[in-house]
Length: 121
Image (tube, rainbow, N blue to C red; front, top):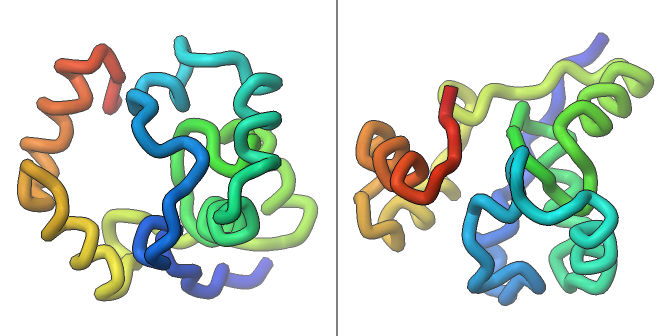
């Protein structure tokens, strides 16, 4: 198995994704169906960037129309060890932290997600 290479977070690329404005809960366990999100993601200008990010990092939820388990199976088939979002992220995520109302504070992010009904555990 080989370690994944960094892929930039799709939101740092300056293009508006098709999912913009949708609540985060849409992309997690009790949100929209994967089939609905596949259709949305398939028409997105950031589809390839989102897919590359999901393959490189151990991200939860649905990315590029792919569930977490589908992405994990694909990485396993390709022999890729994903990077950790928490320990292996480079500076491009600092750009996102500056845009967030919680300032990139992980505890504040978890509280914000919990307020939306999204489990972080």
